[in-house]
Amino acid sequence: MMSSVRSRGNAFAALELDRASESREDSVWLAEHACSPQARFVLLDPDGKALLSADRRQLLAVDRDGRERLAVDAASFLGRAGATDHFALALDSDTAARAAAETGGVFADLRSAGASLPAFDAGLFAYARGLAHWQQRTRFCPACAAPLRLEAGGHRARCTNPQCGIQQFPRTDPAVIMIVSDGTRCLLGRGPQWPERRFSTLAGFVEPGETLEDAVRREVFEEAGVRVGECDYHSSQPWPFPASIMLGFTAQAEDARITLGSELAEARWFGADELVDGIRRGALGISSPLSVSYKLIEHWLRESAAIELADVVASSAQTKG
Image 1 (cartoon, helix red, strand yellow):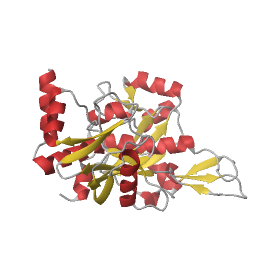
Image 2 (cartoon, helix red, strand yellow; image 1 turned 30 degrees about the horizontal axis):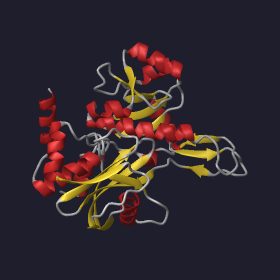
Image 3 (tube, rainbow, N blue to C red; image 1 turned 30 degrees about the vertical axis):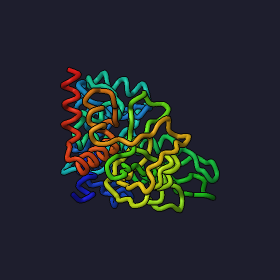
Image 4 (cartoon, one colour; image 1 turned 135 degrees about the horizontal axis):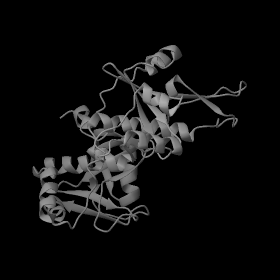
């Protein structure tokens, strides 16, 4: 399977949207399309929660009339899907409460609602949330401290000081996340803030001047003391918590000895049978299907033991039921 296909299977990554970035500089075009009957507006509250239907199974975007009733002028352009132009509106608390009351919807966080939303809605929510977070946190020039003005449909901020004029763009922090194997086992770790018996793949941010592969090797050694040799790209996933792109890798251990670093409370090697048995009995928790970590564990189980993780999780749910 090609990595592009694997990426599309990750949460928030299957967004069929033409971002129409070439049109962001045309303020007249943006204004016309924001006033179009086909325009739809994703509503976000100050905490980055989006307005969803009461059952939380779809985004509850409003049309131009709904936007006029809310009296919110600044709209960020997200892109086009078919004949529909999608925008995001950042609301204050009072306006958000009014929007929920008028529509019968509820504001929900992406972590809690992402798995139940259709792929397009989940991806659009993630996109809008990441952009809104950057706008909220990037309000003053880092060079001269003058206020910034949003441009290009909300995708650029320019310093209002005529003597400065520096431009700022939405920030995305690359992070590597990896499933490490020693041939018959995979390496999983538990953060100090996690419940006991809950494990995930290791992960960490890429540093300046570092290749992705070197970041994989460094992070695994720093966290678990395991030396990694070969590693291959698996897939990627937008992760707006608050502004990351997760770059998934498979990796091979050269030395399986674990020397725990300061970032983990525990790190262990798991064989396929031990992993499957622990999940089925409820004695072992793994990452949510929302995370690419789940996909990496799924990939390793399939490749190493011809076992489908979804079947294991389903059997665990039946046992609990």
